Length: 445
Image 1 (cartoon, rainbow, N blue to C red):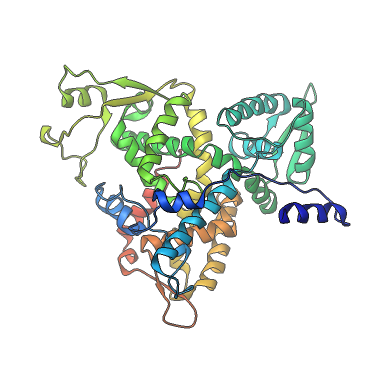
Image 2 (image 1 turned 90 degrees about the vertical axis):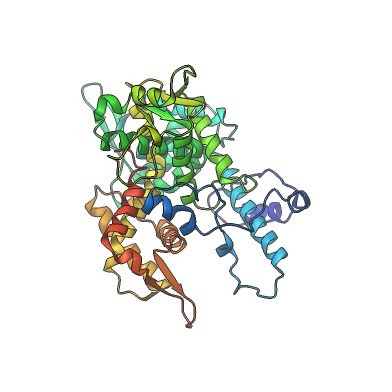
């Protein structure tokens, strides 16, 4: 009632504009506490989960849960009992997830997403309308609410009218059909990118899965497979799940349902790639030796060795029950690019921020580090094709949090201000290069 009263007061007052109210799905706090499904204790630091995979290519540690105790540090309300602290963190995760996933998709989000992630160089209105029909159908298929109605023409006209300050409009000869493209200035791209956030969350399973597929295909090319083999490669279920799980650990709170563990989410990611038609499942012929099948069909199944040239029959492990191939290799690159592009904004920010750390006068206060990294990312965006959507202050905060969790930066809370310093291990070029390559593998190239 207080929320409705606040909305009514805005409507009655002398305020210009409109008020949008989203109704989230309620959940039982009592059930959450008694069932124990949403447990946040026992999580491991991100450094423990990913660094062995990044540095030594070992996957034995990625199946644990990520520690999220930083959401409520011990210094905040130190008198709070441990059990209450864990419940408060769990409730915080629920609120973050509910506030982001229950937002209705607006027409401006559909148009912004297509312009940034599929038609960045411009698109005819007729093609934009066709793509909006496709994207809207996919959004509704995922049981997501939309906050609009009416005809397709009216929908596009309304969205373009609202986004007009951030778009370029032109007429295509000889018919004079309008062409729409996003403006390349920082403010326009940041606003359009903000509109895309809700779409990224709707397609988060497919986006993670597409990035995992892209990472595995890039390994084929890295091993000399070439483009023909790249899109005809057979992907093992376990390896695809592990890649998805690695990227899942990098996601900020709010993407994964709080009562679902990361491994279960990664399994759903693989299933979603089959449901959306990117991958088709193939059954391994049980009468054929597993190692022969792997060699004959090029299944991606790697060992823990750092040397890719070292291979033997003894390296063959238990096979995946299922393997996957791209369903339509001639059409998949465009769909993969679109899905990967949804998360490339965050991944690009991580790469840029990591490469910019050596410019900072470490040790440095957390506030100054945030400000200077923001400046470096804006400069880098200008040099890298005006990708300003990867230079927002929110993404800088996300990158900084990720580096602290990975152990790249070390926090010093002994002083009045929080100071950050570089981990001596990552001062070595080899480790830094491995971390950059780890981020870049998920970006469709």
